[in-house]
Length: 124
Image 1 (cartoon, rainbow, N blue to C red):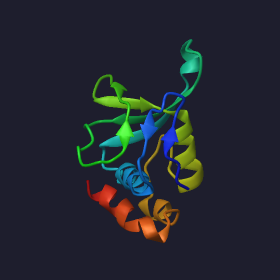
Image 2 (tube, rainbow, N blue to C red):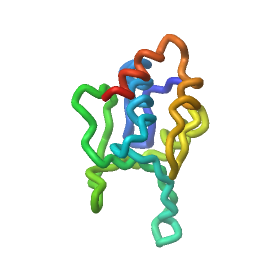
Image 3 (tube, rainbow, N blue to C red):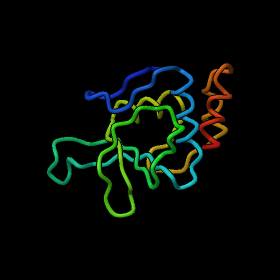
Image 4 (cartoon, rainbow, N blue to C red):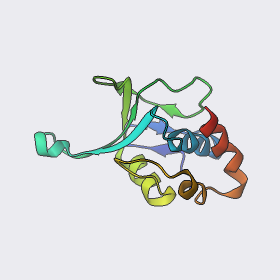
């Protein structure tokens, strides 16, 4: 289920559906470059929980998603706070928050016409 803009500040944007499915492939590869997390920051005095994508390496320039990165901490190079996107891909594409991704399970949620885009993201 493709959407082109996520977040109240447009933290994640896609020009085309192909770019969206490519990014899903990049996140699905579960090779230590990214991690999806749900942080309960509200328990530490922050105003709300946050769904985040943590990047342990900067994504390659060939990745077509337009991402507003914020500073990382420790071994996290950067991160994107975007509850809407994290919830969306968990609900519609079987991504696992705070766990390892199951590429086969995610792949069944990808339209046949975008499997090549998804696979391109897996290869990045």
